[in-house]
Length: 385
Image (cartoon, rainbow, N blue to C red):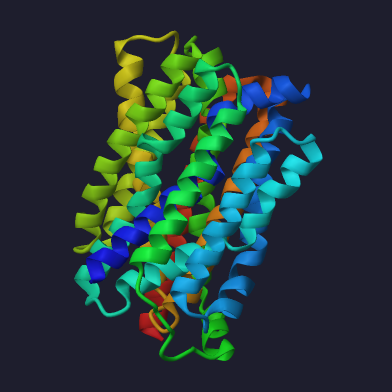
């Protein structure tokens, strides 16, 4: 039963991530259609992430006592409506508005799916169940996101991307309603207990780490299609294939990270982060499409995708008394990182061009590594006191 719940949670994240990140592959088309710059089109991603960051903890606390099946079904219903309306090519202001509406329930869905899958598992199996759920992020980058991008390029119509998003949301909604058992919350934790983790310096340090690490990812990944097009000289079909490659190696990386996390959370997090820092330099110097570019993107996907999982595990470990709220804070700070990372890169793109984004990624990731050292020092001080 627990594996079944984890796999349905994974499917839910596939639907959610397809909606959130599906615009990445079509940003150039959207910018052209609406007659705006690529950095302004990037607001469709950063605004979504900003709403998640601000609303996440409050929405998760508010919803913490509701039946988990009901929460997941309602959330996917809203994602479905978003995909349908977006596919109708509304004015840009309306597209922006309808895009951010499901962002209010985004952290609720992730927290609920993870909590449902790990509720009764021991520590070792809990990381495995979490890895299955979070694996939906990598799977979406293999399947739904590149498929949506490919169809948009094939028919030269970005609306097909949103049609795919709506179709996936519908499948997930039906799956939740028909296969997921009712999951009432046995004991709702008090707001005081949940908010208490915000007084822990170690937890705050881990939250800032999550902000910086996820932010580093999206300084470049947000403009993935535009980067491959202008720097690596790829056409739309090749970009779709590179998204697929990125996702395939990402799922493999997520599997490896899930295994390693069950043994050592901090060390695993540091390994993937340091490796991500190292990949920024060859990415910056990559040129027109070649065999080396192919391998570079494969390695990039392997190293980057697990960072979502490692960041959450790194934070939740510091707040075992309120895992769902800690998870929502992780999601909020991560999405704040997405918003800030995307926006900062947008500014650099406007001033220095798209090739500057890996350098911004290097700076964010380097700051995240420093924050890990700060957290370690705080932990040492707590032990001594």
